[in-house]
Every structure is written in structure tokens, then in C-alpha cells.
Amino acid sequence: MKLRGSQRVIPYLFLAPGMLLFLAWMIYPLLRALQISVYDWKLLPGQVSSFVGVANYEAVFKDPIFWRALRNTLAYAAVTVVGQMILGLTAALLVNQAVRGKTFFRTLYYFPVITSWVIVSLLFKYLFDSSRAGLVNYLLVNVLHIMKTPVGWLASPTAAWAPIMGLGIWKGIGWSMLIFLAALQTVPIELYEVAAIDGANGWQKLWRVTLPLIRATVIFVLVMLVIGGFQAFISIYLITGGGPMQRTEVLLSHMYNQGFKYLKFGYGAALSYVLAAIVVTVSFLQMKFLRRDVEV
Amino acid sequence: MSRNQGGRRLFNRVVLYLALLLGAIIMAGPFLYMVSTAFKGQVYVFEFPPQFIPARPTLENFVKAWTSNNFALYFWNSLRVAVVVMAVVVVLTSMMAYAFARFNFRGKDTLFYLMLAMMMMPAMMLIIPQFVLARNLNLINKLGGLVVVYAASGMAFNTFLLRGFFEGLPRELEEAVLLDGGGYFTIFTRVILPLSTPALATVAIFSFLGSWDEYIWALTVINEAKKRTLPIAIANFQGQHASDWGLVFAASLIAVIPVLVIYVLLQRYFVQGLTSGALKA
Image (cartoon, rainbow over all chains, first blue to last red; front, top):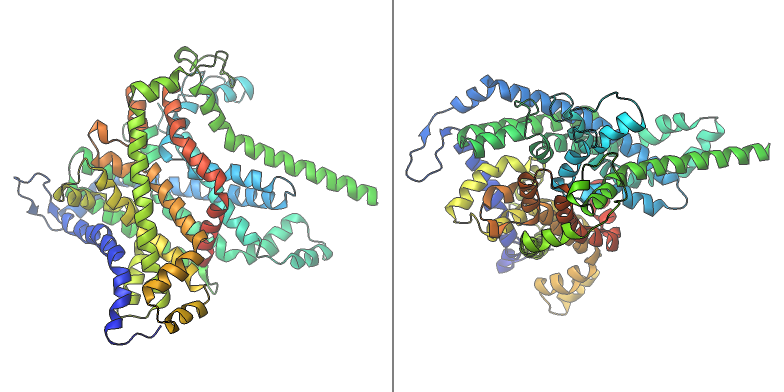
């Protein structure tokens, strides 16, 4: 709408309260983190914070736990993103074909998405209990006979990833499913009919018709899930606490512990900037290489 | 031949529903086991073999969680925070979205891209400076400290979602209001908002649930036991009573039930909100 004279102030009046909140608690902290990251930051008022330049960043790259946390984060992201995409798409294709009970299955599959991370993390910790009475051990040993003895899930740095990654996938399937379901509605049904006349089987229809047509959505889901993968924290914090011996530490748990357990705020802030740089770069690369001519 | 095709169709149908059922077991199984455990007495939590239906169901975990562990208070804290955040987010983001959807003004693109860019950042990277700020403003151990951060972190996404919705509304009514001598505030409250109830409901639900479930920020700024919200109380609880899973899950269920009720009753808004946000993004 065209505004004249004193009316020009109107949009700013609508913006002001929300923007103030956003600038004060998001943008200002973003800049402030940069400042904190170049100081040996002291939290208590009496103590003096000294300027240390890039020392915190240097320390990050020399920190073996940072590299381990980075590797763990990448592994977590890779496994959970692939798992969520494949299972989410499978669920979407199945639900989409259901004549009856479509809403029921959609509702059920989506429910883990909206339950709190705290509750499902504790739930998975209990399901993966190391004793023979843990539900997963019971299923593996006594029902399916895959294992001979119960697995000490949380005692071993390798096995501990099973509940963590399993939870990451299980909780996220519903979200990808819902986005894929919406995209599937946009594929014209005639194309499947044409493909059927040409003798295409279900698998070929999926690869030649469905996936190329929902390509933009696939990329969107991929980018969002990778960003989500980098944000893994609560499940690790509550299931393993980064243990045993910091072997399941991820970037955010490392950052949080450095900041709030050891009160190394400067170092933690530097870590968070390194993390943000990684996330932005990865998202940018994904979009650049995968997007091509498609508009998301 | 037609009988053969019919047989094949039936076979496909059976396979489809078996697969859907398997999925349902995997997705719902953990929750059912949680419910079952919440009704088990302490000695049965690790009984072997595990029982899906408790042999001696009891309500003692619920009674104990609610009465002796202050869960009523934590529930009330969570509810107050979530309701205030919901109201603040709906009002402020709809105002911003209106400005972005209907006006041209200096700095519009800069502000808009600033918000978009923040949506890509991992929210937790701000936790250290936000903590320093909260400390300077004396917001540690205050529920208000939770409200400001929850509301602020909802600004970008919800403004973006509502702007998309507002842009799709027809403009004729708004012009009519102006011709009748009404102002932009009238347009906003009498035209835009009433036409946007589904989108506003989506924003309200997501911001309510977001605050209801939030853990990390609450863990960081709340130390005082009386100010705890449900997620910290539950996690804390598990730390203290490491093996008292019945009690932990009874408390968890108390926290999950409102979510479940909102979800089942207002389902269509979840689908709408997510897909409109996602496909337009």
C-alpha cells in the first residue's frame, strides 16, 4: 500500500515490538557471542575478562575432543538423515496408498515428532537398559535370538550410538513423512497411468516419476534434516551424558559443557561460532549443488 | 485373468496394511511400554521377562509424582510460561507479518533476510550470550527469563509463516475499509486477523508446544526448585531416582497428556502449518 507523509511510520509501528524482542535476544547475542569468543570471559562481576584475540579459536582446533565431537556429529547427522529420509519417504508412500486409516496412521507416525525430547530420551534410555530385562535386550536375546547375551548399551562407546541414533531416526520419521506426503499430492496421477502403460513397475515409477517430480521437496527435507542433525544435544546429554569417557560427545554437548560446566565462556562461544560456520557452509553447499534449476 | 488381477490386488493390499501395522508397532510401541511402566510398582519395573500388561497395575506412581514431588507446581509453571509465550508470539508475529506482507518501507529487505538467516542458525549457539544477557537483566531463576527467550526464538519462523498466509488474502476488503475512513489498525484487527484463524491457530499451537517441551534454556537459567518447568523436573527426577522408572514415566505422562489432547483435537492445523511453511519456504 502507498503511504504518504506521517503515514510512513505505520509499518514500523507494527514491526517495532516483535523486532525489538528479536534484535535484543537473537541478533544482539549473535554479535555478543563474537565478542565473548575473543576474550577469556569471566562471568562474575569482580573478575576482569582479558582480550585474547583468536586464542580461543586456536584452542578449538587443537582440542582433540572437538575433533572427536565433530566426527561424532557428522556420523550422527549422516546416519539419522539417511534413516529419516528413507523411512520417512517409505512411510509417506505407504500412507498415501492406504484407502482406509490414512489419517490414523499419519497421526500415529507423527506423534513422536511432537513429544518432548526429554521424555523420549529417557524412554529410550529405559528401553535400551543393559540388563536382560531391558526391552530391546529382551527382544534381541529371547524373542528374536539375534544376540546370545544382553548388550551393555550405555557401557560401550559404540553400542551407545544405537539408542541415540535410533531415537534420532524414530523421532524424525513423522516429520519427513508429512512433508513428503504433501509433495506426493502434487504429482499428477496421469503420469503414473502413462508409466503403467509403458510397463513400468513400482520401483521404476518411484525413481523415474515420483522422485524427479518431488526433487525440490527432497532437497528441502535433506537440508532441514542436516541442520537438525547438527543440533543433536538433549538425547546425548540425557542418554549418555557424552560418555563413556567423552566418547559420544557431539559439538553442542561439548560447547554446553565447556560453557556451563567448566565456565569457559570464551571457549564455548568460539566453539559455537565454529559450529555455526560449519552449519551455514554445509547448508549452502547442499543448496548450491543440489538445487540446480529447481525452485524450492 | 481378471481373477488373477483381483488376487494380486488383494495380496498387495494385505502387504500394504501389514507394513503399515509394523510401522504402527514401531512408532507406538515405546509409548505403550511407557504407559505400562507408569502403572507398575517399583519391584516390577525390571521384572523378567518384561510385561507389556502390568500384572498388578497401580496408580501409586501418579499419586506420588503429583503430591510428594511438587509436580502440580511444575505443571503450573510450564502452563503459565507456555500460555504467555503463545499469546506474545501470536500478537507480535502477526503484526510483523502484516507489515512485511502489505507495506513497502525502508529496511524491509534487510530485516526480512536477517530473520531468514537466523532461522538457519542452530538456536543453541546463542545460549552463552543469552545467559550473560539474562544475568545482567536479573532474569536468572525467573519464569520471565524463559518467556523472553522462547518468544524471541519464535519470532522469525512464525512471522515468515504468517506473512505467506497474509499475502494470499484478497486485498479488496482492505481497500474498502480505507475508503470507509478506517485505518490500518482497523484493517489488521477486523480484516486480516479474522480471515487468518487457521494460520494463527498453527502459530499458537506450535509456540505453546515449543515452550511446553523446551529443556536446554530452562536447565540453564532455572536453578531454584520452585521455578522448575516439567521437562527439567522430569529429567532431574530421573537423575535422582535412577531406577524408579515407574515414577519417571508417570510424571512424563502428566506432561504428555496435554500435548496429546491438543494434537488429537487440533490435528489439521499441524498438517497445514507444517506443509504450508515447508512448501513455500
